[in-house]
Image 1 (tube, rainbow, N blue to C red):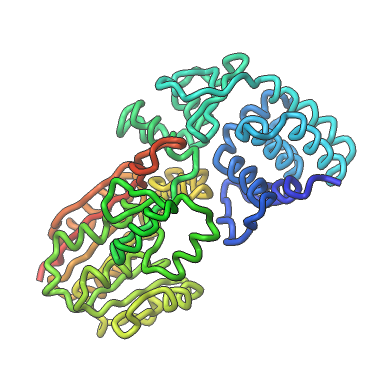
Image 2: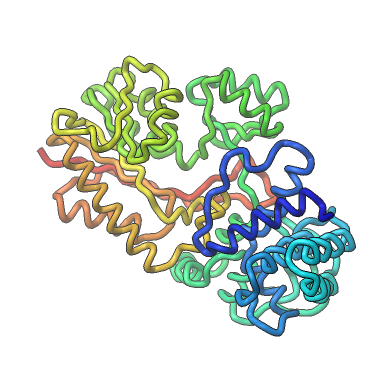
Length: 448
């Protein structure tokens, strides 16, 4: 019988193959906290983060197009190549033997021979692992392994073209990388892409309980982040759940937290009586708004009815915070401050939102622009004359950020009070205390 942990990973990957590039978010609890669960998760996460990388290397040993293979066979090859190239503690023979065993048992007997031949060619490419050199993006004989190191290859197999090579190395769409190179230059674009290759650290916002955050640092379960109101979680995932249930802390990247802090710096709290968080999601920014504008009535709204019950349970101070569906908001709810943390391409948080990386293209960004503008119009309809409109994304794309701000200011006569942009910082295997996501925020006032 095939190894259970690998079999679960392969079946999970096969479900993604059938819908690629429109990948689904993995449900909470899809992988348990056991050793086998962690192994399955490592295989799946490696495949999802490095799909282009793995497909390219696998394709070197195929006579047909990779995407012409049936989904289950693609999944076996992706899982096997991920173990060989990305997971340095997995013996090559185990990755090969178990992949062949699964193919024979679960696909068809003849599939085992193809899997064996292709994965052996992948294994033959491997050299030593070492720290990533500063010129990794210019090398054709190195593969990033997602941990801050590189795998030396036996021969230079990567393309000569820079953005094509970077696309294969970091598994990001070439069109997105072309945009980043044009906007920021090759070196910054490569640094931004590198951040997306490995998992991002878990960062907690401690602004509601700095003493509680400091206690976790003292206990050795967290370390201080460079941002004074943030800590980096270092202990296991299970104990984090307990901390979040007991403490007044929540998971939030410093760039995300800076959205509400930017508003608070620019807007005197005294004149703000009613605040509306129109795209409340999990309520992290709602919590910040309730703290920053402590005398105001807070409304948290979302279009997803499934989130509303979770929002009501998670948000503090129920007497002051109202949770409602967007359709339940009307003119009587006209707010002094409306926060629009709009749906976006997530190009600033690809280390966290792995499923978003393959669907970013000009068409998708154009569709998001239209949605974002409709949300701006909805937010303005619920804003009083002279009120504050705050627009934010976790995107790096100008069409979703500066262009939308320019459109809003010009179309509706808004006054720009200030804007902030963060590029992603940190890299896999690097110092987590300086890590942060990319984000954008613009704070505007309607003219009374």
